[in-house]
Image 1 (cartoon, one colour):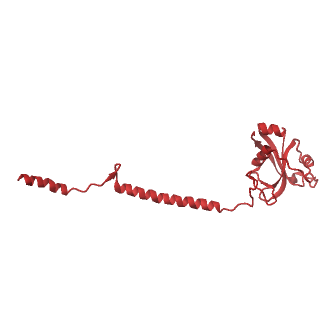
Image 2 (cartoon, helix red, strand yellow):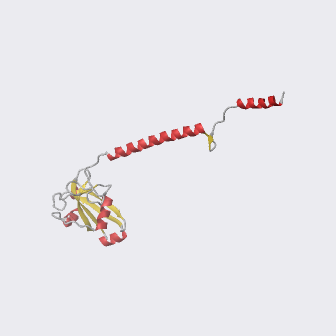
Image 3 (tube, helix red, strand yellow):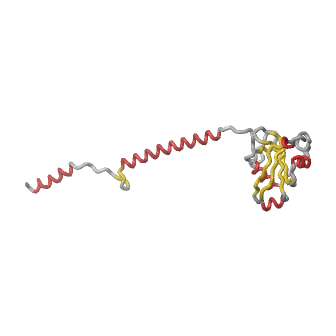
Length: 190
């Protein structure tokens, strides 16, 4: 063989080699493209799911309670605060914090307190709408301490929700018929 023939042999071998696949950061380019396509499809699915979940949540219907006062408590059409067992603690905390006292109008709190056997002094009271039945009642917050001490230190106080007929003698035989709810509420310091 001549030196030219020797040079041609390696040239022919080089032409028979497979083309080399490009890589990005050591990852073959086709794998990188496939991973990007999968990530884009997952992103579109997640965005669609998020949009559907937030859209359906904004169209959910609830009770006919609006928050016109800005305090986060719901009011019914008559303007009374709607209170349930779940929201009672929050409402009592709000009343203690603000120190709001409503005029009693035709409600005799002292007579109601006596009928219900409440021996503690009434700290705060508010006319409310109780539960989903929209029953008008009075929330009586009572305890062994005065309101200022309660605001400063917090603690456990009693709360009783009664019908407006409480204190009128309508249920002398069973004063418990006037009671919608009674229990204790934990109040934090101001």
